[in-house]
Image (tube, rainbow, N blue to C red; front, side):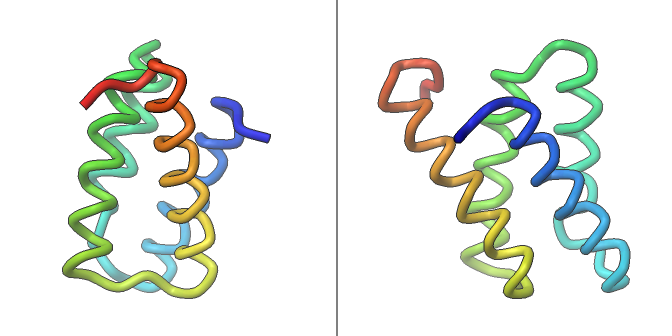
Length: 88
């Protein structure tokens, strides 16, 4: 089931994993999303996050565990677009 708390949990997991691997890949985007979400800007923050994740997916690397979180976030984006909550 998709909800904002699960999305936040996935992004927090990605942030911690990136830090543990010692990579800067995505760290700024993950932190930015979490800060914006805490400030009540979930919609725009999530849209920006998806753009960053698409770029990282195309040119970077995710571990198997990270990829599961990324896939979940892309599924959420697809569903949110389908219901009209998320616009390009």
